[in-house]
Image (tube, rainbow, N blue to C red; front, top):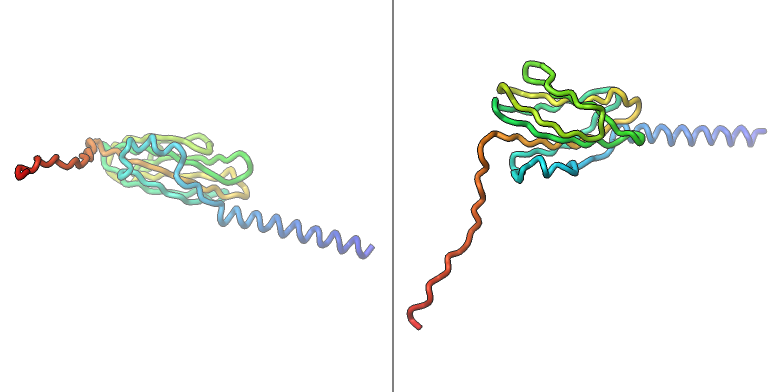
Length: 168
C-alpha cells in the first residue's frame, strides 16, 4: 500500500511539474514568428518604407502598437500569430488618433489590412488575446507606409565604353 501511495504521489508531482512548466513556457515566451510569409507583396518593392516587428500578447490581455501617419498616407500591413492549441487566433483593430475604430479584423491567425490616414497623428494597432485562457500569442507585424510620392528609381551604373586607343 505504501508503494502505491508513493507511486501516485510521484506521478502527480511529475504531471504537475510538466503542466506548470508548459504553462510558464507558453505564458512567458511563446516564440517568435519572424516576417509574415506574404509580406513581400505589401512592400511593392520599396522595403525601405516597411517595418517588421515581433512581440507577444499575454493571455486575456491586449497589446498596442503605435504608428505615426500623415494625412494622405496609406498604411498597408499584415500579421501572423503563433502559439496556443491548434487554432491560433487573435483579434486586431486599428484606432485613429481621435480614438475612432477604423478597422476591426476577424479572429484569425493572419490578416492583411489597409488604412488610409485622414488626419496627422498616432494610429494605434491593438491586438486582443482575450479568448486565450492560458497561452500567449507571438505576433509578427509587417507594415508599410505609402506616402503617395513616387519612389525614386535606382539607376543602374553602366560604365561608358572607352574609345579605342589612338596610339596603336
